[in-house]
Image (cartoon, helix red, strand yellow):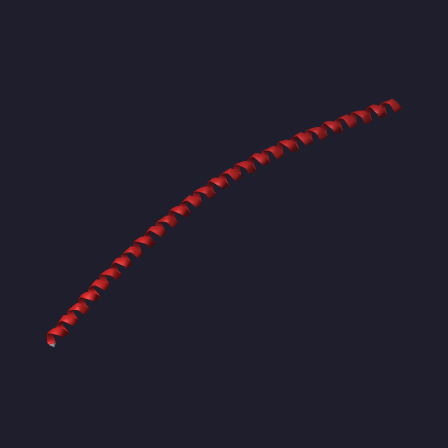
Length: 100
């Protein structure tokens, strides 16, 4: 009877050890997967940050180009307006000279 109890206790202990090893293996695998997921997320974050920086730089360049074009158009329009005002002033002066 004692022998049967000792054998049963030994088998139970070995089962727990085997189960414990299996649990440890699963825990290790889960930790490895979690580490891989964290590394992947960090890489994705870095890639997304780089893409966002590139897009921001491109948008800034485009905005600078648009601002320069708008400034050139404003300068051209101002020159045209000044030229028109000069022509009208000359025409008014000519008309005034003819009436005197």
